[in-house]
Length: 92
Image (cartoon, rainbow, N blue to C red; front, side, top):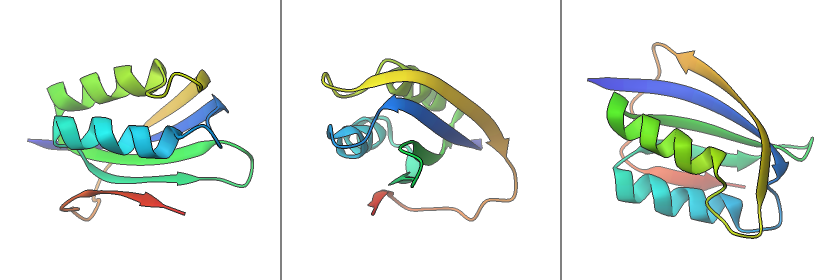
C-alpha cells in the first residue's frame, strides 16, 4: 500500500546539496514525490511509498542525507488523496 507524507525540514538545509542527496535516498528506497527549497530557508518534501520504505526515508532525512547539512526540526504531516508520482523530482 502506498502512503503519502509531507515533511517540512528546518536547519542548514539549503546550499548544502540537501535536495539532491534527498533525491538519491528516495531513488534508492523507491520513494516518489518532490523536494523543494522554500523562501523561509526550509525544505518541503512530498514523499509517497510503502510504509516501511517511508520510515527509512524519514529517518535518513532527519539524520541529514548530506554531511554538510544539519536538520534541527522536521514537521511531518500525513497526506490523503495525493496524485501518484512516477519518480522523485528536485523542484527549484
